[in-house]
Length: 413
Image 1 (tube, rainbow, N blue to C red):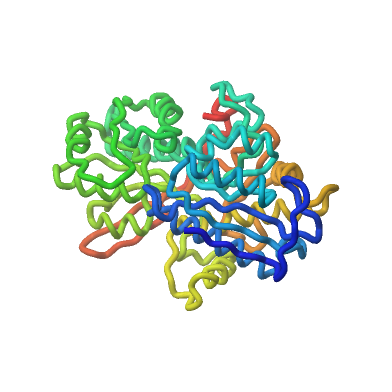
Image 2: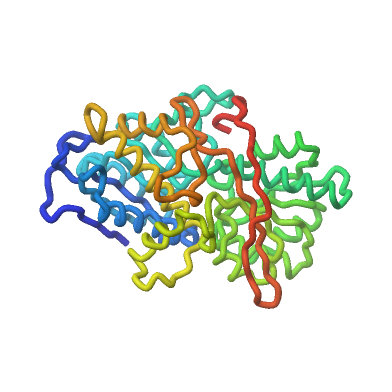
């Protein structure tokens, strides 16, 4: 699937790699997974980004300069993502990218740094937060990588905090914690850092259990989980495989409390898993569709870009996609006032000047975020939600929030 949106009636040549003159449309590459193993969450997030970019363009673009973007479905295939990125930079002179997965985002770290093209990805891997390569875990510098929301590891740490409090209430001594996910860069990203934190918080960390990102029959994994005696299980895959796992575990009588990462549970996964999902605690990185926050008025207008009726319910990922596009928009507007205009280095510099920033139209939707030249942990605030499902009555509800310490030793981890 490939969709191109042109912001100008007449195409203009973009002058110079990674930059745009005042007369040129500003080109942004947009990578999505609409048909691959993470398409269950890729579709709402990608639609949020695409709708936001179109809305931004219709509402003045970037300080009056038109925006042009191309949405490419790379089916979660990292080599295809790299080839698409090279075409965008070489042919289309992209000044920025709205990216997607962890494997491709981490593979592109060196390319975007060399090309000076900011990549605003939907991978929240902690490795991408070490902008200057000074983190103690030896992560490579990722100066041109940004993402909106808490990292996967901080999300897992927040759930561990919740689980510690829950275990205390239940008088569980030395609770057991286990990580479940595929052997893939995305589920693996928080594994080590979160396990270390769980140990620090008094949990007995059990050997991880592997299950595929692709939906399947996971009864064997569920029996291993049951045998482990784990009280709390962190699900590191996306919603599609989570549905299969929850149903399989329900079948074999697993009573473990499930904790899901930011892509592991949402309204669609809740509907698919039914009562098997009741009680799952999961990470949310912004307002949900039912929120009455002031910025939801803008969100609902943006939603009409692809749903003219305005009646379609948008899962939690849609709002994060909008936030990602609008943080990039604000950085571009700031870059337009700098010498050289809207180019990669100026966008980066603008991002690293934001302090507790929220796009003006999205108050209450996006979490206030701060980036610096050395630390690209935009926010360490985590919203924790609960999935509720009983007899066909389903909802998600906020159960609390956590502020994870911005420890120097956790940079890049």
